[in-house]
Length: 502
Ligand code: F6P
Image (cartoon, rainbow, N blue to C red):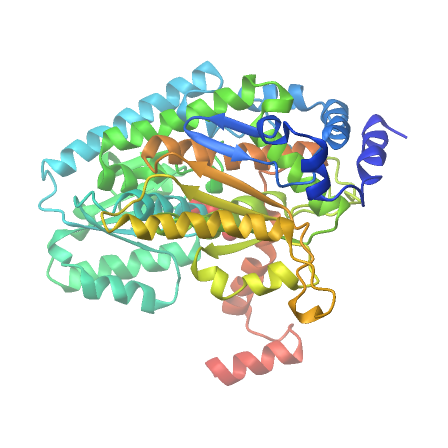
């Protein structure tokens, strides 16, 4: 039995154990020991079943899995993405990485800034609307940033269109003046079907509206600059990023362009600085005080030992309403795997299904199951101390009180032996992440925390979090239906295609 199996035995012995209430009673200093403050964010893990014993087991697992060396390899720009033979250099975008990669990222950021300055100076004519087409990591990150921080920016109207369903694009056409629109094509590969089709339709919309040189109003964000130039984008308006920055980790690169334009360059820099602060914490904080690592211990405890198949994230702040969908890609596309880096079955559950919503809406929709259902769902609450609006403080007070009340209720439950329908079992775990304020720096730190937590989970399970071969088969089949017809497919698929497409 390897060292990691021995560590897992210790951890798995805790399939049952003290209830949360008992842990609180036994450990008077629980809150201070399991709360980490970093970069203006409080991470409270006290309402999870993590105790000294479990922590010890996970620390042994981290040692057995060579966590420190693998983290060093990530930041050194080594080829940690073993199946694709390349590095994963998103941290280099914010200054933590191999010196040559950091220098390249700085150069590319400078180029991005220069283009933003030119757009602001109306070098390409008036720009009021930004039509960004991209999908997956080329849309979710920028969309979250603009939605979370752009409410008061008032600089540009931004539409981020990902779906190939023309309705999405048409909604943007209805809102935007083609003569004042900048078309931003975001695609790491510059081959993604949805994005290329949306880009072509958006360009046609500009041309049909009488814009003389629609190509003159296009910017490309890509790791395949040659493909963008071939598509027709002028070289000076192609903002490249490194091949070693993964799609779902790319908002720090030129993929963040619409956010940098809409929020201003200073805000974008603050975002990078906040992320850099979290990187520093992840690199240097001791394991027992390392927020992404402790979060990964908690994730694995519930997914592997308690067999929780999902984890729920509720943003108790309207500005963070897109956080759950952003996290779905980050977590599920990274760690939704069945084999380890050696290609062998992991033998344990990997990433749970990430889902969630916004508080307080979710309380009136899905919390019934969380409090009384048969599934164990570890919950993550994300809240912000300072409100994002100027309405009466009663709003924010009610929002935060509801957030904290839910965590308390999940944990404490309420016995009602005579009336099972009104019995709340309690002992249901939650983590609370509390930001002092929602500003670019803190948001950057929060998103870097999630990235590094995904990495820590992957290392502890032996997964490569940086490839995503699972998404390829469906794309391949769609292509072959277009090219070769339906002959080789099953009767159900053939009948559906026949019925809908003739
Ligand atoms: O299909 C999955 C995926 O490759 C994601 O990993 C990526 O973020 C998305 O597609 C978009 O890819 P691209 O940026 O190359 O268009």
